[in-house]
Length: 402
Image (cartoon, rainbow, N blue to C red; front, side, top):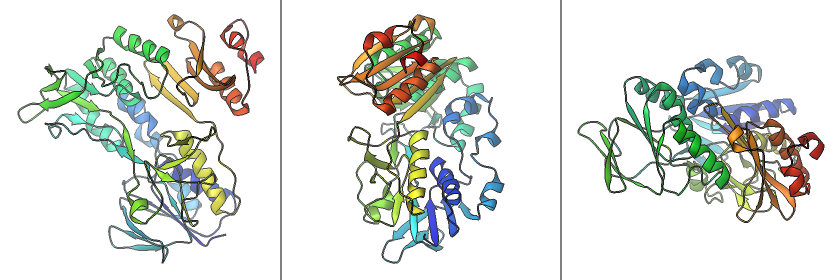
């Protein structure tokens, strides 16, 4: 086993890697470096319960401080890594410190995609990716009247749902023709758009934002050739992988750090896990996943490989979103050309859409339908072939379909 392991990036993947390394018997030096002033914490609650004020900050943290002490892991928070020298196996931090390693894990995650339009620097325009972001946005919900959400993806709609509970008027601007278009099928998009409209959210689809207007602070959104009043805005137009360190050190990358089935980069002593990576999925496609599941499972596999126990990464991806009283759970990856099978009635607010590919269950989208999600995820993992009429028949319990 290596004597020194350094982990760059203090998120979900980092916390998991530390736990797995120690559980698998690695007893060498372990150092964690993160550019935020916090230990690894959960990001999914940020746009949901933490923004709503129903989830305390202390509960965000993935592990108690004692975990890092007991794991004999040196932690360096609030300091970014500046460069990697692969020839000498050293990491240089922005404060001038250097760390030597035998194996290195890049868990650098991702950052928000910035909107590049006039007025984008006006006070009142927010992004949501960190604790600090939410701490800056939440107070405005108590003093503002109209929230503009730019981007109808997960983050945008989750924030819209919270804002409506605060009583704000909410307008969503989405450049595509439906909400969550990059993540879900049309039946799911249509359902969630209706739910939000029924809650009072106004949508402008096929409408890109052309600029922000105001004297000294945000006062309006310019979109579709018109001006729409707004005193606070949330921009949620996607995230970008943090690959700068990998690129500068000569590792193979392209919309993510390229890793093999063991989460190993083009340098055999450097591994990567989480949002920053690009890997071959279960169906062979080269993909980059932005989800908790991928961060956790890739971190496990990277740790196993560093501990000399390599195991092929073949996990079924899963995702979720909480909006109002609805839990959307997705397993597998949706593709164009999939055969879709509806199970249940959307009007009941409890239904699922299954995706079949060459006869096998390839993905499932479940709304308030845990059995469909859990069994569907199992069927995907097994590559099971199920007749469409059986999946659609709600008289047949999901456990019997499995």
